[in-house]
Image 1 (cartoon, helix red, strand yellow):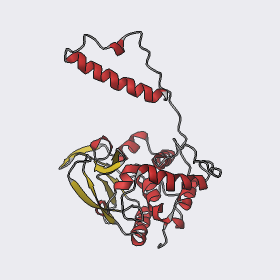
Image 2 (cartoon, rainbow, N blue to C red; image 1 turned 90 degrees about the vertical axis):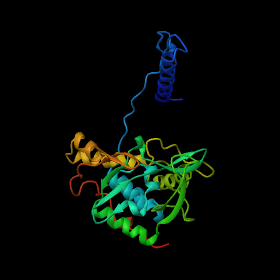
Image 3 (cartoon, helix red, strand yellow; image 1 turned 45 degrees about the horizontal axis):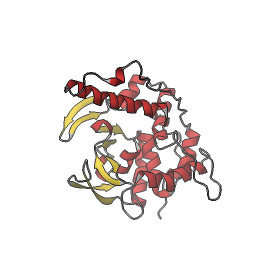
Image 4 (tube, one colour; image 1 turned 30 degrees about the horizontal axis):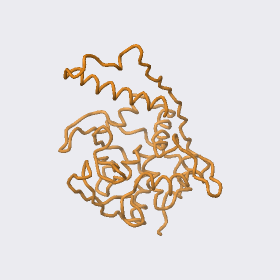
Length: 270
């Protein structure tokens, strides 16, 4: 177990014990004792992919999921959000993508839920990304997927998901990573190709979140401030029927962040 993860467990335990103190169940929080040594969290420096690496992954990805790489990089979406993007979320005329849901797992079973921190948002849709998405939907039409909302026993909701398995069912994180993501990043030279009978190497820093890291690094290198990047990631809060909603206050400068796109981003028909 890593020190960072152990520290998170200690924080959670301490919060539970604080609540017990407040309720009068215990006299004090033992986690605050000087004899308790909480592991020091190590800060790992993550090296963002460069444009050539993103392009190589895009080239190596199966046609069915090239659009997922394009959208993840061009709009800075998380993996679960990519799995939950529906046809109705993409507004080509307004040039935005509404991030209203993600696909989560519990006991290996999928369900729809609000995005991270239970906040939805709108992100700018660059023209090149929109063109690639149109090509993807023509080649691989959106499929209706019905899943529970917010929990396994929640009410059912149906959305026409943009990215699905070839069977038309929802993408599952572990299965997608092992059968599509890791083979693609190995072919792209990000991680080593496994030998016969071996498994792919761990890719802690090279999951789908690497697309978001690249997006941020490109904008920062182009002169965008950290504050501007934070604003683009959605800072202004408004209310919606499903709870607090963040909407991006500005788009990134035109042309930033799509240098990695090549004609191969346009999937061919299966």
